[in-house]
Image (cartoon, rainbow, N blue to C red; front, side, top):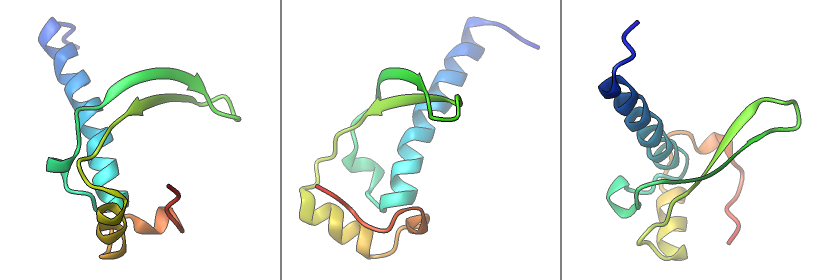
Length: 84
């Protein structure tokens, strides 16, 4: 198992990219409209599972997010509504 600095950077890139991919898959918001994720905290959920919290902004307004979401998000089944 390689423990070089570059491997750590690759892991971080994968983690932060996965945050954006999840937003795109669940909301159908274009990646180009999202800012880079900012890690704002770590916690344990109600079952004790570790969870990371990120802050991401979009250039879309609420109508744009609604339009993207309603046009068929790949993983839209994971939510039943948007709340603004």
